[in-house]
Amino acid sequence: MRLELGTFPVRDVVFGSRTRWQDGVLEINRDALLEEVRKDPRLTKAALELARPGESTRIWPVRDAIEPRVKVEGPGVVYPGIAGRAIDTVGQGRTHRLAGISVVEVSEVLPHDAGGDFNSIFWDMSGPWGDVLPVSKLINICLVVEADPALTVLDQNDAVHRATLLICDRLAETTRGLKPPETEVFELKPVDPALPKVVYIPCLHSASAMSGNSSSGFFCTTATYGLSQLTSPWVLHPNEIIDGAITGPYRIASSWHIANNPILLELYRRHGVDVNFVGVIAVRTEWTTMAEKELMCLQTAKTAQMLGAQGAIVAWDAGGNEFLEVIHTVRACERVGIKAILLTSEDDPTGGAPTLLEPLPEADSVVSVFIGGSGYPGAAQGAGNVLPRVQRVIGSPTRLVGPVREEVMEVAGPMPPPRYNDTYGFGRLSGIEY
Image (cartoon, rainbow, N blue to C red; front, side):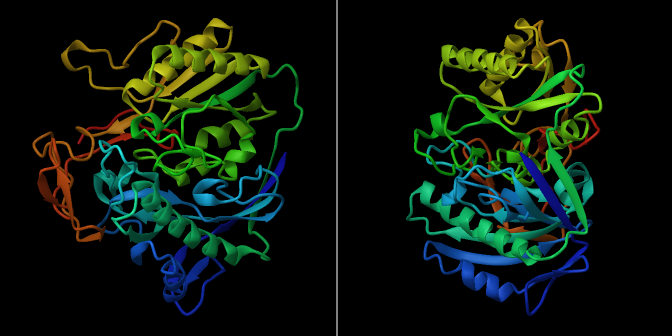
């Protein structure tokens, strides 16, 4: 596969009378875009607002953030399969991207129909929380959107995410027919056979066991070609990920993080220099029995072995019991002779508990990417210090917190410092305290 990625840098975004990119400025006809979004009768609210780096602005609740990209040559569409999009294999031809911005999906629609996973993610554009978020360095085009609560949760998810993708598509289309200021070619050409063969193994949370819904669709969690349920490991060409074959959020990560994954991009740029990048194996987590978990790990190691991998980078996007698939994948790789590096967050050693849920001797090469505060958003107000008040909120002005979401908190006010798992290694810190 050969993919050309054309980059159109955006240094400013303004609302105006038309939608176009010119000389680094993205002009948006807000009224025209919103009129198109509001054609979906399932939506009850749609508004566009801008959040700029350095502003005293908080965005809540954040469900996803997507970088506008468009296929201008080659098969398929960017972000395939999700919300009913075409499922043709992507990763070839030419794709254009608007760099330096994201379209943020701001909505109170719940992730899935089982409850338990409440919308808790917020972003600050400045201050201590903004300092650790790579997305706070972007100009964020926020689509504040809500769906008819009488719909099923799955239909609500579909409606708000389709609206976000529509905005992304219309913005990215402004680059069609233009010459990109920057172009990078991604192609896994044959290299020196003496170079070590490396595979990237992202472990991706699935909500299908939690939600009880095994159908395809968007559950506010990562999807591969639109499928978010538990499946066997996928072998993917890295170009497919650059074209959005894996998309959708889980916790702090978003579609923007996945498409701009620095681990994958660094492996690609070092292909033929000091490594031979042989591909990606995407593994689903949160299987319900240890036998299922172990099976997925063994199949992943077998697949990596069949690709000829001598080394693996294993990373994950979740927490809790999903770590068992991750750590057992490391063990399975090591047992077949593949040297595995684990990229992971760590937990507080409360009561003498290990910082990793199940430390195994095979996990002898670990990179800690935990960046965070005293707990997840919604933690008790008294836990540690608090993030400062902000001048402006994009989205909902209040949120429910507490053990059973019985307390109302003002979003603009002081907030508990959240925990940030730097899933894809954007930062250079291993830990931070507020």
